[in-house]
Image 1: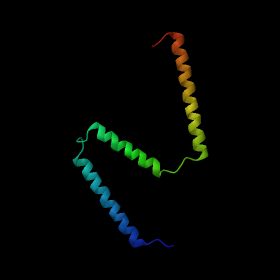
Image 2: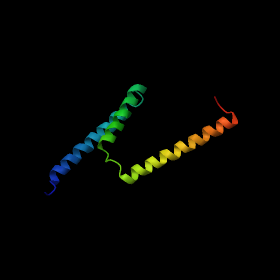
Image 3: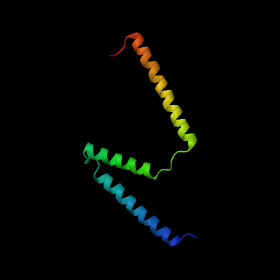
Image 4: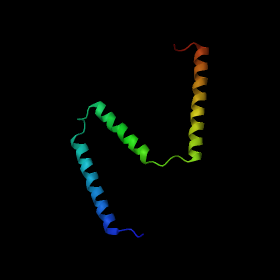
Length: 89
């Protein structure tokens, strides 16, 4: 099925106008959001991004797990060092 070029142009123009309006709104309202509302907006954006992002590939998943294992091992080493040297609580 061929792409409807006019529909694509129309949709792109609508998106461009919406994006421009968003930027203007952000500039006009900068600093007016409470920290709670700003955080909520950030969380909602993150949740939206997670919904539309493709799932990680198997190799990405394996790399992520390996990174967590490395991090955990480093924390264990640090805690052992801290206990040995009597640092902290």
